[in-house]
Image (cartoon, rainbow, N blue to C red; front, side, top):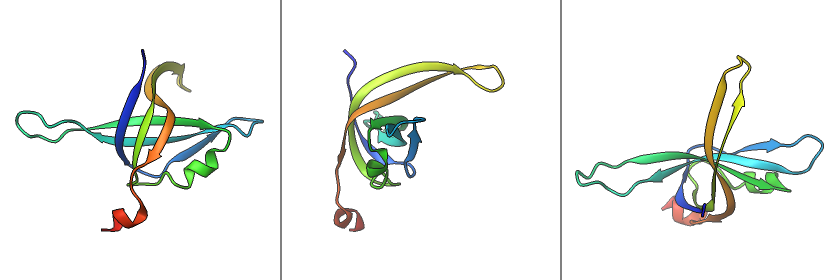
Length: 110
């Protein structure tokens, strides 16, 4: 089973990745997710890369802005590629199935 559920805030505005010759694309962003407090009460945060594939990525991009609190459910994906210097790079990210907005503009302003 590969299922992930996260709640966190966007660290910066999302980016759109479009496929050539297609309306399909992805909205990519980094989510700051707080960990549970440890015994010594140190606050830890994980920064997790998220990709959400859609036929209309521009619509989600408008709302996925820095500081926005969102819930994400999806799955972990891993992969690799060879960069321009012929070095193999590895990545891990969450491929989102669902994104929920968890606060309104009024709530954040308070």
